[in-house]
Picture 1 (tube, rainbow, N blue to C red):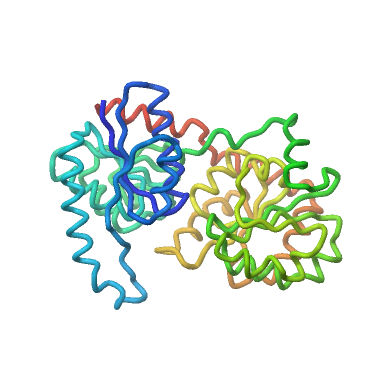
Picture 2 (cartoon, rainbow, N blue to C red):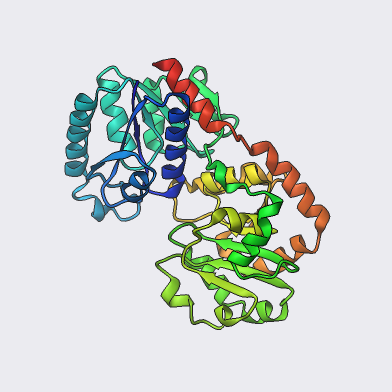
Length: 361
């Protein structure tokens, strides 16, 4: 059995792809897997670290706001389509899986032209243009939200949920090690602020501008992930100097960070939501305004409508202080959020998707 998994660009695409590959390996140790990603993107680093081979395409995204940046887009797309065809012809896959991201489009399109079975793994509640176009010839479309027949052929849909890393869950016996790792007090309530692997400037600015609040509420401790791009900018700010604020460029032990967090302030990417649901965490979701089709707001609203999370718009981050206090000081509200978000969790998503792929083979 030979499978190509294509896509990436962000952790929200890369880590589900690796989770699917891991599930395939568990079910069939002899399966041959090849990833196809975009050169210079996250997958070119993370996939080899996970133990898988990857080929890179010189593909880029289409800029809707800055049209002048699309001058080289047609050439790079044509070049990527040609290389994708070469890769497919050489590897001869039984099934090609697209997880979203720049490389997913050319690879799935060529596979469909060549009569090879394809599977789309759509993480978001509002799909992008590429997946809508590819859906017409896809064999199966794995989704994480209800009512996706608005965008895709109903007969091809399978509600699988989003694959997540199962090693994120820790036992209560691991908590002392987690508190020690992050050098925080187990007697204090903990807020985890994460803006994705690259960080989020607006979240960082909100923390920077909240020195007075952070100093006053010394009973709350904060694990603040600023992102590698922003670490030098914020590591010396007044907020970062407080004893109850612990600033990090990158969170390398997400299992420990999730384990100690009472409440999270984070973006509303599909992978983040899947992890929150699996771990049953109370969260304030701040959708990124810089994503296509504003899909993070749509992701967040799917939870807010079920009282499974709280929504805070990026433009209203000045209200985060009162919002975090209202949740931390209300244990009943925390219980409701944790209970309701559980319904969005699909811990067996990777295995379910692997079974669908095997059935197609």
